[in-house]
Length: 434
Image 1 (cartoon, one colour):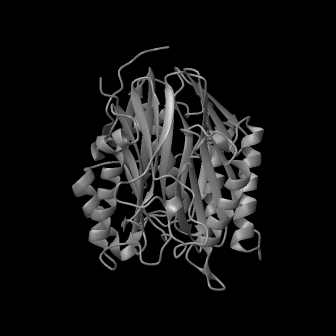
Image 2 (tube, helix red, strand yellow; image 1 turned 135 degrees about the vertical axis):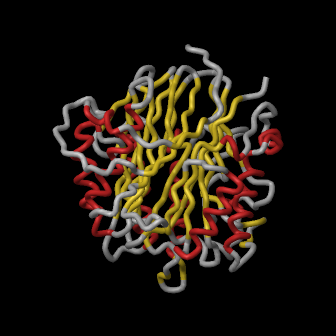
Image 3 (cartoon, helix red, strand yellow; image 1 turned 30 degrees about the horizontal axis):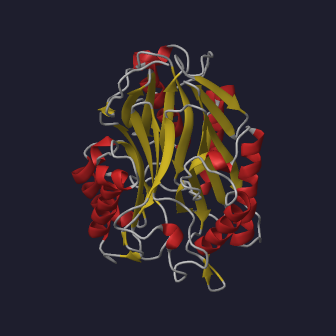
């Protein structure tokens, strides 16, 4: 096994060189596609290196004012230029495309499929308007194929094998059952995702991270919010499929739930996706993290949901001499209550403080890993969900004060409680202390 000291995330911002676009696309095929003249898309990316592996976290936003299709081509071209500027071959494994309106999803899908062809990453088209007013924005993860084996298994699964570790990125697509209730829709979505995972040779016991994009998340069905019904369906699903299974992060026989984000989108559908890990390596271990400032979501009182949300505040994975920490969707909640109601600046500050405390070394030590820990500077990227477009400038100002020029996507989305104005998720990479 290669042993390369882990690097702290290196953040970059650059303008792509148009000359790099004259070759072949990232899938290695001659594209023959006419690219738009405007290739100055705004982008930030982070380079992460460990165990002889290179990964990129990329955030790309088009700068041109053309049609939605032109903006999509510009964003893809910018992403491609970044990959071609790396010193080893890279391929995109998973990407989330944030789109301004439902009518643009088919156009985006057509453009992305035309570019990637058979090497289409796991791609989610999420109707959450970018806060800067653009038609779309892309969050993408890319990996070096010099040391990793990437397989594109249909439209819903991508696998990555490296150093005796097998990652599976899977989605059940978007489910819209017409007149089905939120509970029925959620229950079916989880069953569909379980079926996709089974087809890829894995299961929910290997899941480390889940994303749930729910239309009208705080909308009512009778007197009950749709998100509460999603939580009821998720609880029932995990009771059937996790309670008697030893999950990867289980310790002392206790069931551990994956890290998760449950966030609103336009429309009424539900999109589910997840990430799993399979390995027999003795130096790989996972733990869940809970926040010392917050009640665990799965222990919330019934006033917030008949059956509490079943997720961990974060999931941390140690492999060799580094730790990757996936931070769940985090908001301005202390104990179990929303704080700073009506004040978006204070909610943004509290949210970042919650993340800071969650990934801190003393919190890892409380969970049994005395040699682990991270700071806000170790975050490779963040997503910032802003409930009201008018609050974007304040949210961005607070985030840049605390995080610096980190790769970030700001998207307008409804958060799971009516009084929450902002939610943030992210991924941190940090070395273990000797």
